[in-house]
Image 1 (cartoon, rainbow, N blue to C red):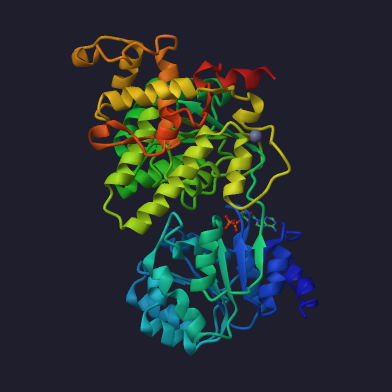
Image 2: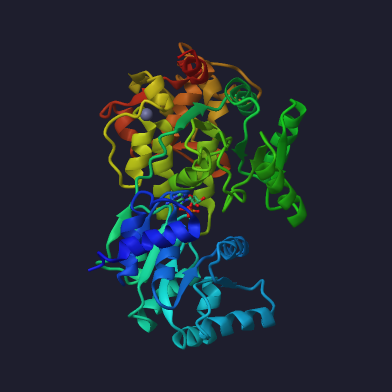
Length: 520
Ligand code: ADP
Ligand code: ZN
């Protein structure tokens, strides 16, 4: 039905953007939507989603309405389009009343090809009236995963976008997102009325990114070694959980002589813009940041993304690491994590006052992330499987592939560690349990020195025990109680009784991957 559309679409692409051809499945998507159908588009960041709605908006009569939560980016996007000669505008809370009125008039008069609009603005009865009186080419809902509580970026107003189907049933709707597992996809289809609409899934694989996860020992020193040995002078992003650790880490790296800027939500708007500006314009700047940094940052030659703390979820991890290597050149996603991180995130989740069903979702997401961290199989396979993609086999470009971990039956060690937790009443943290296992006397453990578990684990060093404890928490055999005390869970009894053998990684015994990788 749309056989005639593609040549026209190509003409528009070449004339307006100066690109010779569509990338990946852009052409199919453009044809589908230009022909009047709905579509669900899943494409990784940097894949080229914008053209998927911009080109059909130019091909169809009327204005393409782009719903986007990223108000801060609208002006830039619109300016870029105007430079290309596209009649674009935006409506959001940053406009003065008179500027907004001018845009509304232009829409009604049919003088706009594209209109970017914030969801809360679109949902105003007044705006919906205006849209009904105008000719609409299509609705493009960008960042569509925001409709889902399962997504990492839930926005309640997105759920009300079901009005689009109710009030404009004839107008093609497209949902676009860079991150959507099965559940998020189902939510998007339900809310935006896309049952039966074709789905365009691009591979999420970023083959040029090398994924690496290392045990946290001395995180800053490890980070510095990594940067110095593999990415000297390169631009990179270092993610930390808290503002304080951003400040401390940035300060420390600066003192070590690196070009560093800090970025977090506690800085003034001006300081943040300056940091962002330097990162974008200068060569080889490292940004140490909280996750507040990165939305809409399009710097092609970011050579590494480092995590000093666990991200919130696999989606978060994928998004954050995805900021590396947009230019397709070799880049590294590097992360350190340890027992304390696992205990902390589990604890934070248990303590949050989110409703039970949200907590269950969060717990499942955290489990997926921890599985990724602890995996003894190809990391890329685990990552892509999470996004519903199957791979042809191990990737050869992650730490597990490059340096396969030794996996050993550690049931006996696990039993020792679990008994230490049981015998001390589940009230003590990892460091205390390690001392018990090693038989190391300290000021606090006088009354536990007579336990049969005291010193039972002398055959291994502290790093092995931290690793065992961390994996037991990750795998859900131990859980953090009040005051971070490690308690055994119900399923630990299978291990204690020897009914379930436990295969654990000997991760602390492995030499650093970085060195090996470089020798190749
Ligand atoms: P996304 O929204 O999926 O993150 P964008 O739409 O911002 O990605 O596109 C990422 C980059 O790729 C942009 O610089 C864009 O101009 C470029 N791009 C997209 N499609 C093409 C194409 N067909 N040919 C050349 N460059 C393209
Ligand atoms: Zn691999």
